[in-house]
Image (cartoon, rainbow, N blue to C red):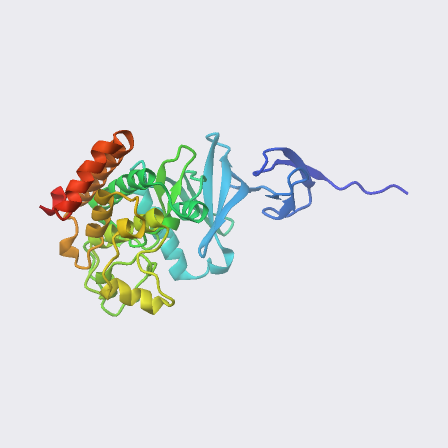
Length: 340
């Protein structure tokens, strides 16, 4: 009696890179184990010209896969909407909104959308690949991300938000998980699912969406959404990465919300002593409780972060001169150029 030989398919392991065989009768996207490193691998799936090869991340709306564009011969990311919510009209509208919002923005630090389509009932986004982790994963790994890296990221993401604003768009969900990095270390702003027009009227009774750890006080007071809401959230995100702590820590969401409204922000340099004063001051100003007390534009915020970056580099390469300058600044009450 002869034994039936089951078909096999050779695939590349996304973890160790080795070629390995998996059962050929697995369903598309079904998982298997790499025989070399025991990592998770999956049966590829064709979605028009895109071959989905491995899972990158999964969220409430869909799952993101590393894919190969067989037409153009390049790696891309494909976000496949979850089948269980494909019949939810509101979810589909949000999915489409993200595609349209990103597609109209051309900026190095905003994820590029290639196409939004549907194939055999599956709705998906094909976009630029940014698979070198998120700012959130860097915080989890390092606890505190180096100050120079945070200033570089802040300048680039603020520039991306300025471009969005020029197109009349607010992001409204800036957080560490929505800043991804590509293989060159460039930050990419993602997830415009909550984006809305800057001149849209605010419904006082509408639910507030966003992440409570970084949300601006005026959003909580439902006073209207402006670019200053995104500025606050970006500064809060940078604060978290820089200090290893969210701006306001509390046991419950309600207490976190109350702190955004009422509790004075603890300056970063008092949380971690080696954070430079210019960086600390820039983030504190961008997170002022009252919007009118923040920077008047993204250009001003970028200038403050850039100045802080320059002074940080001087401190690293000429520590004695930098120490004397900072000592003098502290003696005069820490008045920086934007506060004079």
